[in-house]
Image (cartoon, rainbow, N blue to C red; front, side, top):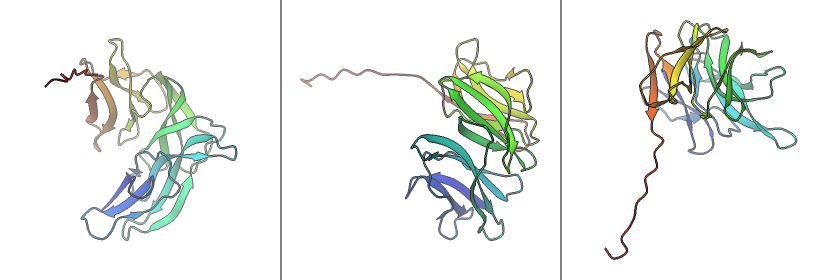
Length: 214
């Protein structure tokens, strides 16, 4: 019934619009800075998204935020709230919902080329780290299966290409899912959990020579 989306129309925030196109879109977040993708909870009551904030010293760090939404009216039931991650000091790059809408699975950037997967309650608290991997894609994104069992992510494979992998939420041995010689990014599970969509791209640079006499 509702579409939550990120736009730079007036600011760097999350907006809400009716899926049938009726009414005017309206901004539901505030203070956005490099805001990421919005994700609906399974019950449609919450919108989850990452965004940067600056602390008192001016240092910038990415956090997770949630906003409560009434599915009947589209009105905000709980204003934008930061998900407090106890003892966590890294940038939160992307977040997805677990199967119950009370658990959040998120991807963090710990250092250049070093990323990790975590889970935490929607109410916040100490996050649990369950996987780490290397990737030079900062915003490659993750996908979580509808039953909350699997997290899909992008990592360098032995063939040198960025491939889609999955790992059990909670930890375990990762499994490579794609093998063709192309670079992947932004994996996303179907609601049934039987398919994963992703983007394929090329690292390609083209040089052109212009004849000044032509």
